[in-house]
Length: 317
Image 1 (cartoon, rainbow, N blue to C red):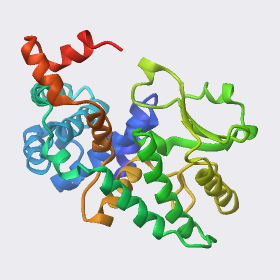
Image 2: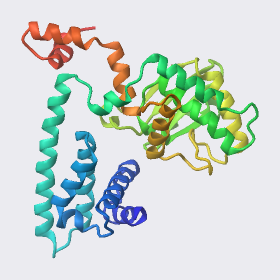
Image 3: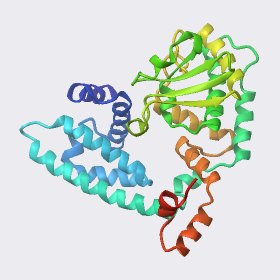
């Protein structure tokens, strides 16, 4: 089913970004499994059934919204002269549903209270340390196969996210020493991000070209310092020996690790301590650990405005 959906997107919307297309493919494919159908037309012909199935299987408003956004995208690829009226009706129904979800999401966010997903996947510094130690213990002393290298890769992934709470765009990164590339050239790339090891300075930089908010912030270089340098040098040496690619994160068959797989893999690390974790929640944890929401909320209440106003307008450096 994935290949059929992907082909439709490629034919009807070839300019769609790869990451966006794959996200839509993933969401639509999962939804079709839940609908127990191979007929994509069901998404507009029986949109009420789609709403019912999504509400039943996805508690989080964000997850529901992601499914509906993907549905709208695939529906637009199916339009023709015969079904245009039905599709217009369905698209309006999805628009209304998404608007309702946005209101719910905005109201929940304004409370600064954890969602159920966040409650389930919230971890503390001790949890992070325990996961890190357990992943490190799984790395064999001698690495001679891709399977063994992936044990080190897992530890690298978790360590990287502990140092920088990036999104899943990390999966779209290539990996170089600074004498293997031209940084000015890398910054002009719109497809890949880059992890670069700077030999003379013994530090790591992360070049972000393809990420969620690139239109707002542009191409950026993040200096990660030197605390991961030695670890990444070791990882690079093994990659040079065992991999034919220059991707930062590879699969066990020496292919680029897909974003969805990275997300799933990261979640699996929580099983090391019997907990769920997620990349999205980790980003929330980092901010929450550095901002005292209770103090801000109390102060905002006394000043007769909301916490968002306090942070975005009144708070200064």
